[in-house]
Image (cartoon, rainbow, N blue to C red; front, side, top):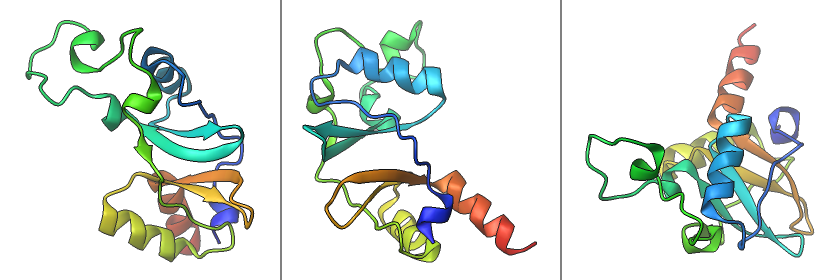
Length: 134
């Protein structure tokens, strides 16, 4: 089940968090996805992919050239709104199928009241797969 493999201590941001601060959190914690909460409710998710500049050349001189990490843009300017979620009691296979079909790297995990209780990522699913083969 998802609840057995999800990350419970989720690092989150708000829609008003600067993109620069979101980028810093991702780098500091070595993560690629941040659920976005407004008044405790999940309203979006931002990934490192959301932060990349679509028009970036192959050569860049600093992270500012490759990522949109200025002090002006906020997470709400780049986040994916109304993200697909999964329940903690769902099976790992269900999450894997969603991630493959939608090309997601993570799914927020919400309880029956739609409160964020965790996040499940591709590496978490791979760990579950390996454990199931032992």
